[in-house]
Each structure stands twice: as structure tokens, then as C-alpha cells.
Image (cartoon, rainbow, N blue to C red; front, side, top):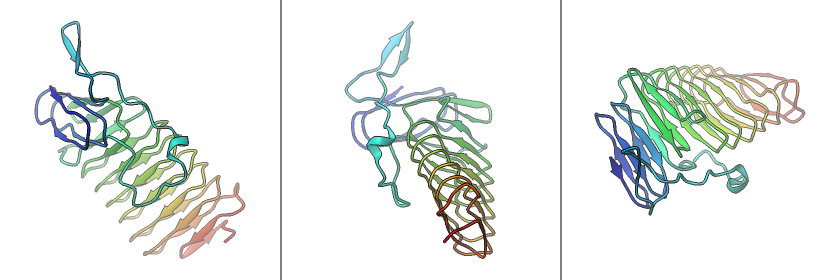
Length: 236
């Protein structure tokens, strides 16, 4: 069992089935091997025991979209506590909606985690109703934003990224990526590679950057801005 106080903490659970309870602050929790329980909880509350099994104290109050406001940017470090799996030898399937992360034979339980970083393999990362920052790292990843202001970063590899119903920022990274921006007014930034960006509903801004990219603003919005080699359904 690992317990920290307030402030920015970095915790490596290592091997074994660990319980990690962090305090207030934007922490980074590395599950590594074993069936771990990672909780970005509230400091000042020591773990309690239920039927002789230790549990973390009351979780952080969830951040809502109204408290974050429109100040989301491509350089924002994140929204809160982060579960990190960059050293995992296996692909990661993580859901912040259902509070779990599977890494091959191991399954971690998550609590009060707002952000997630995948492995160097083909991961599946899914957000929740809070603002999330999801980073796939290398590999052919699939990232799914939730129903709040999110930031999705595909990084290296041919990724598939789907944003949610609010204003999101999508950074595709290197590789031949596919982005579907959902129903919100999103910003999508390509890099090298042949990226395909679909604005769908919402007034989106699609930037192809390097590579022969395609930007489709969608037929259900009136003020999409597109910059790419191939442009479809864009008003500006």
C-alpha cells in the first residue's frame, strides 16, 4: 500500500497487487505489473479498512466542464491525476468511464483518474464525463473522448481518434491517422503522414499540417475552417 499527501506525486506501483492512494494535486500513477488499485484521492484522509481490506478515502470532487471553461489549449499539461502505462509490455485497454485498465493478464482498478497515457503498443483509451487528457504514445491506438472538454493525442502510429460532444483539441501526431471530431466545435491538428479529418457536426477547425491530408468539414455545420491538400464541405 502506497499513500501520499498533497502536491505533485509520481508513484510506481511495481510488481504485485498494490493499492495506491494519492492526495490532492496532479499526480502520475504507474500501475506496471500486477492487479493494482490506483486512486487519485483526497489528501488528509488515511486509508480505511473494509472487512480487513484497506481502501482509499473519499475521492476528489470531479472537475466539471463549467469549471474548466474555454481555456483548453494544445499545451495544457492535463486536467488532474494521470494513470501512466508507457512501460507496459502489453497493449492497454483503459476506460475512465468504467474505472479499469487491462494490460494483458493484469487488470488495474482506477478511481479519480482524469488523464491517461498508454503504452508503446496498440492501445484503446476511453474518457468519461469529466475533462480528460488521453495520450496514446506509439502504436496503432484508438482514443475515444467523453462528453466534456477533452484533449486527445495520438502520438506516433496510425491512430483512430474520436472526440465527444464538447469542444475538444485533437493532436494526431505522426502517422496516417483518422479523426472524427464528433458533435462539438473541435480543433484538429495534423502532423506528418496522410491524415483524414472528418468534422461531422459542429463548427470545426481542421489543420492538416505536413503530408497529403484530407479535411472534410461535414454537411451539418455552417462555419468549418479547413487547411489541407484535399478539402471537402468547408466554408472557410
